[in-house]
Image 1 (cartoon, rainbow, N blue to C red):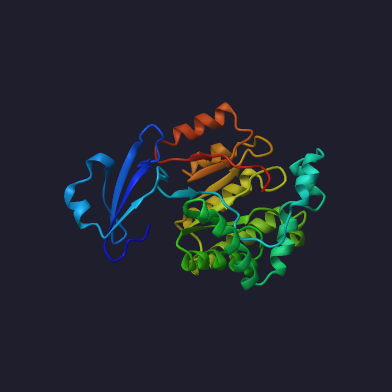
Image 2: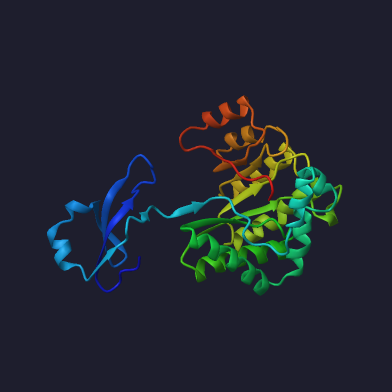
Length: 295
């Protein structure tokens, strides 16, 4: 709705001004000048001075105007394709079985490491364009498919570039603790040490991280390992998030609440104790974010 060069009056619309479906203006109207909303209200109550001074008047035929959408959990930047895993899921394979068979996160890690920055950018731009077409104006983008310093940096740089090249606000989340990479097989503690002592500080110093996430699960990282990442992030002044209770209930939501995490995501196996813990974090505490278990 760019209206540079004068005032545009959008009329005969369905307006949801605060994103609340119970608060609608139908038919509504909105006046925009130099990319700023200067008036919003009922179509029959548009001030006369706006009608007379409008350089453009557009009849939207009862189309919708809502606040821009926010996608707060995406894995937008990655290489390869795991569509074949949906066939396995439909045949009864679980997320855990697919991961242990070499699929899942580490399958995408292999493809992402092989892709250069330009290739990742082109792939990710296509995905972002699809979100923009649906009204998304702000998006969180996680890393987590590099699992080493160079490739995590590559992912985060691509995410930053997306925010520079497209009309969207991008927040980057470092998800280095997404899975144990093959070169650290059987040495999850050593990998967490690498995340905390090498990767996280370096990427933070480069200005590539807005928040830090961990996948706490029986196929990923324990509560104790997740807390080590949280402690490091907190020392660096970075907010935290967590993939919690996705496959089993490990108490990750309670850990998130203790650290006032921005969110605990997935939560397919959240129990009452986890709910109460998140509730106790207060109004500025941890948000429950549901998400498909297929990522």
